[in-house]
Image 1 (tube, one colour):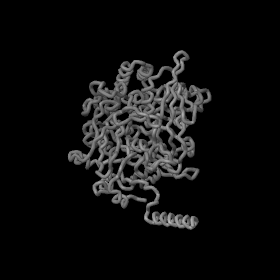
Image 2 (image 1 turned 135 degrees about the vertical axis):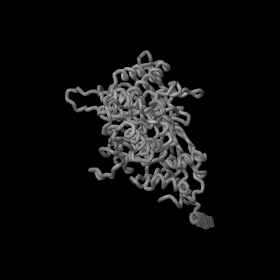
Image 3 (image 1 turned 30 degrees about the horizontal axis):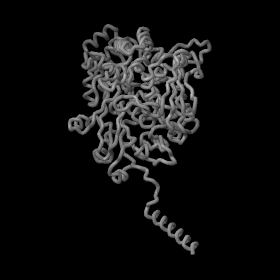
Length: 588
């Protein structure tokens, strides 16, 4: 009898389970929404070491990578993948070090993020054969500067993985650790997996079969000129045995369609096929702004022209100054709408002495008067050209092929041709697709290639601040901090430090940066950096035009967005209403 009851009970449970499955009650967990968005112009390079040259690139880097620290919406440095920090200083032994324990999280391929991944990424930036403009942020590390200058080897660096999840960092001497954490929050200093980077000779990050990331999302699909799909990194901060797939990242996917241009994506927004757009067409911005339909957010992006100071006529400071003076920055603001005239090299929002909860002082706010006039002065520009003995000539202006940069380039071309007598050619760069010798389908960024090799006369740069500290943003123009590629193959070791990509070199400027680097008093250091910025504006290797702002339009169907201090939104916890409507619109 008992056996019969047991058999009947088993049969009942089986039938109940079968019925539940038939009714969908035992279906796999809901993956979450796929959100149709437009996140700026197309990018072809997902290498964080180059995230300082384009605002759209920085937006994506902020979604797919995460470092030990990050900035909150107010610019305060908070822990990200750092679990704890222990200071190990021993003044009697002249020993200065910290240990950072990592949180348990994994790369998008399921591999544990380890301390060695940070060591690899930072060593790569410091490598004297690598052009890494963020290298100076690591110079406080023992022997880091000497390695970058070619005087020591990678093995001499004061960074070790004492445990698989513990990173020990030794320093040259007493160090302002709060400032160092500020640097570690830079998007350029995130970890990298060596096995991925070394898989191909170049452009490793453009192939999604190679690319892995440790942030909330991974680039699941990237088809140049067609689309990009960012998919939830199911291993981000998650215990895969216990946690829901949406425990730390709510959306399943973010979908961006590139085969539709900026106007077509705007039309999709108006038609209700997009829920988020941060790159409106130029001819729609003013109307949306006046109607109160757009959220304007400050960024740390400075649209600037970089001169190659090693070639004529840009080797003459009077010519560089003249080209700058002739431009009306208010006119550029009128073109872009979401921008404000540049007042110096350093963006508004960079701190003077670091973040403060109350009454934080910005570098720009403490600079006093603007170092750059917003309005143009053509007569003074002509006078400077006459002084330099230059009367016209040919100029090639290299730009990214996107609506904003092309419009600004056309304005610059018009002024330099009509008012100053130059003949200006706009060289618009895009990406190029190719297959390498290992049969990997790759994409190379032609613009980045031109920048990295110095193959330009003038190049329009969407220049991102490396940090909320002014120093690394100014230091890169000093030869000892420029982190330019050096030819290490010279037999007699007679190589010299490379200049910044602009070719700029001024011994007095270098001395000022050295003085600021050595300064231990915060007020003295800030004053020296203000003096350095004024020198840089006087020499004009870089010509700041406007500081970008972000114009964001989001429908009521998307919520729970958070903000980055760099000016872009974060989608980690984003929620989507009316899912059924959008699920019918997104591609599969």
